[in-house]
Image (cartoon, rainbow, N blue to C red; front, side, top):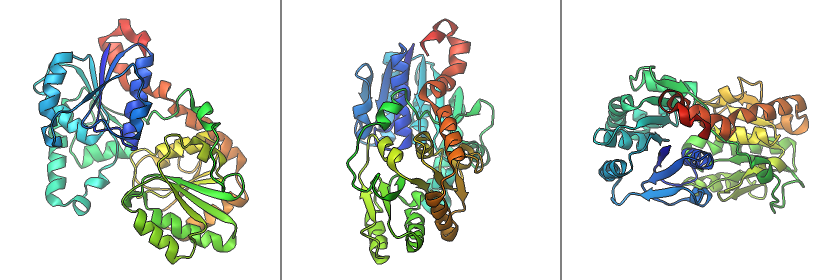
Length: 374
């Protein structure tokens, strides 16, 4: 089976990680896999198996990408093409109009909050939604990574539910345990009570809420620390907030980690304060490592992953006082039965399990004799 997985690049985002996880899995199972990217850059490139071919666009502007994809698709005649994020879905959809027929899968990575009129401007939002409306129906299957993501595609982009399915992200690899056991050298972990957050320093991740709640919690539990793993354009702003609250000795920003699992394993609490999400990979990672979890009850996957509080605490967006209370409660009185149940739940999102679900209809309907490879 020839499979092409399409992603803009190999950056540290959740969609790019999904692309690499799926590509490596399908390749291990015997498929002939190519990853097509606009730019072959980013930290996840080093995680791509040497068995996998990488096709990088030759054009210099993203809007010209379909002109590269059409001859590429014609030359390779893939059995299946899987695009993992909104922008590449649109480009692949346009290219598919002029390419040989392949079984086409689009994965929608997030709710439409990032395409609101207020955040992107009226014209840009309208153009994107029109392109989604025109190109997504070309796919044989549309995967939404949460129920809220699916609802937004139907309500805000006027897509039909036909051929649409909700499947969580493929997160945990067979090497998960070995990765978690690797050693890290941060002086706070295992020595101080440490709260961990993982995510790019961006408006949607709402680290201001996290820092403000940490400040309140520190008034009652003096010797606690906060580690934030991630990089992004809001770092200077967040540093200013930390300094203004006088907690610069208790907050550390750590650069992107290709293997964050040891940080989860040694942390005392994981907190996720996003304003919206598609899925919430970091929640699954934290749960799998046996650390208690708190998340905002934001649009997207967190409330589904945590099953409305069964596997971790939920707090409303910008409710800083409640978040501080939950931080204190989890640090002083961790719920071990909930932590154990959450760890078991996390393994629902193993790569081997989810990867099969992604392409199962194709294997069953189009290529039954090759089903064993996945």
